[in-house]
Image (cartoon, rainbow, N blue to C red; front, side):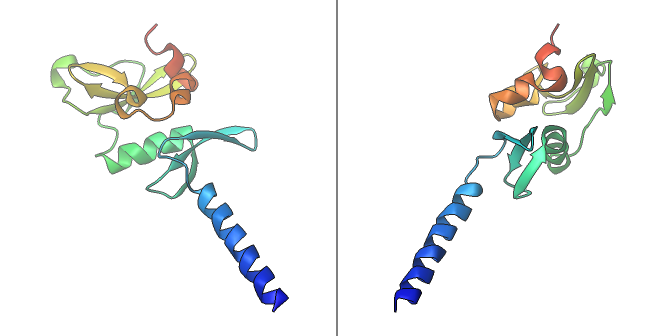
Length: 125
């Protein structure tokens, strides 16, 4: 009987532990193995931040304007278009929202750490 109680208790503890591992919110950033990763609810796993952006873009029509140092022509851009801008410090996913380009994180409100990742910290300089 003691073994059955022990097994039940261990099962309960493992179940609670496992549920806490995946209790992260979409876009929540964590450090794993020294690298920043973000929780993707859709993919049900941690992704590096650029992969998180690309997964988001894929689920929302793709990166409309590709990747470049030069922004697309303003008159051709539509609400929610996506663009991966290249700046000296790296890439940043941009989303056209309410008549201007914004960091996708500023529209979607993922973890604030996205605003310091790669090119996002200096995208408006």
